Length: 65
Image 1 (cartoon, rainbow, N blue to C red):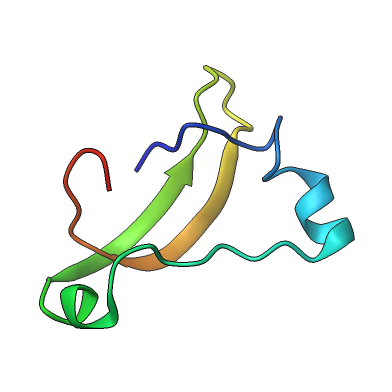
Image 2 (image 1 turned 30 degrees about the horizontal axis):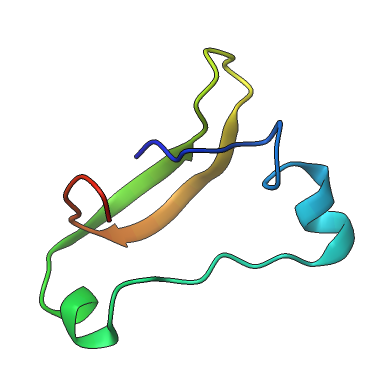
């Protein structure tokens, strides 16, 4: 998945330094009703280092979620 920000913004070293945590925006019931797959979260840059999370289980999502 691609996010509208990445490691060169709030998901960079500041997230570790200040303890930022990502929080799901979908309801628990909606997440539970969808199939999940091993995923990676990429930022908007074209840099190969702009990967915020390289191994997580995420529900199937549609654009805008």
